[in-house]
Length: 342
Image (cartoon, rainbow, N blue to C red; front, top):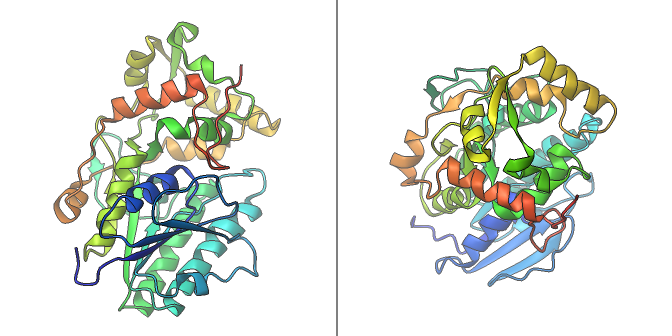
């Protein structure tokens, strides 16, 4: 623990995939006196030492400064993935809302700000060797998610210089999964009516093997551990977070008992673009383009400076998530509500 004990922590986006794991972990920490969770909708969930406040960061009227006063740290997780057909709306929540949080934390003299960046902030990079935190963070400009994550990296560059006394930490996790996030992520990326039971091995005789589709995954609870360690330490700057092994069609084929079948990039993208254009698929072809170009991340700094190590392998993470898909798993918050379709 640093000399300034983090007794009061404020978490934005506290009811989502990452937020629920962070709040739960902090509420169990004996060195945390209280947690204030901010979300658009108050959940039917009452972890110990936690209270809630309703805030819509997309609103120009939102002023979280008073909620931040007296806090030892603000963990900024709030993010909107949809609507992908209206990037101006996600920009208001993600970029303008993020800047609003940064400025409010500074105005309230909060000593520590921990921001949820992403592997999606990175510029295109290698798939066969891992990059460290010095890799450029210009994102893939055609994908709103990457564009917004990269813009906030630039905003934090300026913010960090303007507020040298504030300790700013940026987490850059890989794709985050847990059982309870299955229904939410099915809705975000696959659509409301995509049947979760389709994840059963016997219904998937083959998987598309698309060149470049090799990414990293991490259990959301392991990411939450990194956030807690960042609050309790004196570290600054960026940290890559990912588990081994890297995920590709071969690994998914083993998990699902399905045979990988090579599919050219143009054919896969055309299918995704057509479904997205018809509003049948929420995930945009631009995000698909970005995923194919994301680098693999080296997590040495998180291990050596944070003392962080994931407890779950990427294979275990995906096994848990797939079971969650099959059973319509969720949690008692509005973003994570469970629903089994099909």
